[in-house]
Amino acid sequence: MAILTRKAILEADDLKREMVNIPEWGGDLYITTLSGADRDSYEASICRFEGGTARQDFENMRAKLVSRTAVDESGKRIFSDKDTIELGRKSAAALDRCFAVASRLNAVSDSDMEELAKNS
Image (cartoon, rainbow, N blue to C red; front, side, top):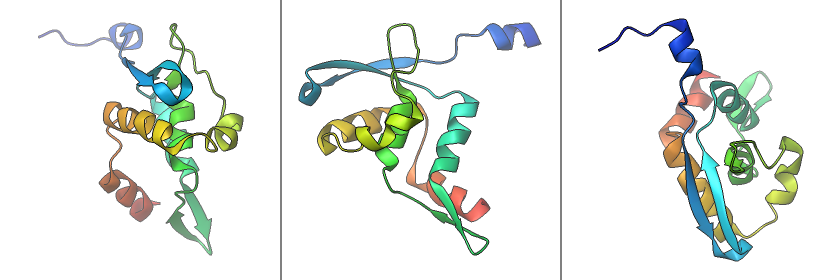
């Protein structure tokens, strides 16, 4: 097994994606793994602070993850963070399908969310 170098790590194509059929939207959509920065941004978006205490904020949680993981053929995000509210108004079934794939690809689990709330 090779010892990794800085160059090898930075040049590695480690953001995998998966095609998901979304019949409610009339086609297919790529869902990708998050970068470290995008994962941190997602986790920050589902926490809020009240009186110095971190609490989970699940409002529009599915749309928040889907907006960060839906990409085009070249791997570029198709939604911005500003699209999250509008995306959240779309079919719950379609969002659930995307969210399930995004959660699996990115190892986002209920226990991750509970741990995040405890550590914040």
